[in-house]
Length: 333
Image 1 (cartoon, helix red, strand yellow):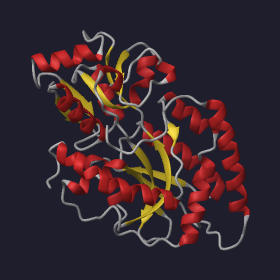
Image 2 (cartoon, one colour; image 1 turned 120 degrees about the horizontal axis):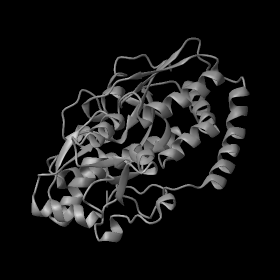
Image 3 (cartoon, rainbow, N blue to C red; image 1 turned 90 degrees about the vertical axis):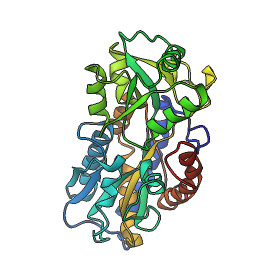
């Protein structure tokens, strides 16, 4: 979003990243090795995933879970709970004990949803923030046989025949839809949004012709790399090095940036020693080469946030996003 909190520029920074990750692993390992009041689980941990099975988030969390399982010596189970614009997974924690055995991936939608939809949970009061995990790279993508060769072609079509062309996103109020609402407001084009539960579903819809384009996270990257799809523009602050010939929306005169980080949360009132132990374990897991190699495929970077930093981000974003939702017509004054 053009007025939202900026995240680090996306792209491939392998040398710098892996040097940093190696340092993080070195820091995390001693923390786990120390015996002083370090919590260690005695049974499996369940993590609720807000997006569809087989999607980028699902695989990413499963890879992290494999590493954390080795660190703790206990299985980490990923339970898919899609729905409610990606907010159902954290809501599963409302009646959970704050003992570290039930966690959830929180998408940024959980910080937007309560502004325009009545919920029985408060994103700032009902969860314990544990750590940041990653952030999606947003783009507008069509099939390779699409008549639109540039973002200007797509905008022109949306002006000539308003709402005729549809696009897939991760749900109402998600980054993809908000991004496109801003695009529409700034260009005068009009399109129709079609919500899906995750990237696996929307890619199937795109490839089968059910939607004309995707405006969301880079589940589409392998399809672009295989020549099956084409990126018209990135909703990033700068060009992505891997796709250096593809412009940003900003470069085409459309001042829109889509931001969409996600992280790990638990039930409210979790003891500090449990939070610290989980944070250290997941931070160490984030240093695993196989985890970062997977993120690279979808143009994602780790999103490093301590428990305090993650909570501070949530508190700030929750306040700042409301005017954007009002502007988009989703929330009221």
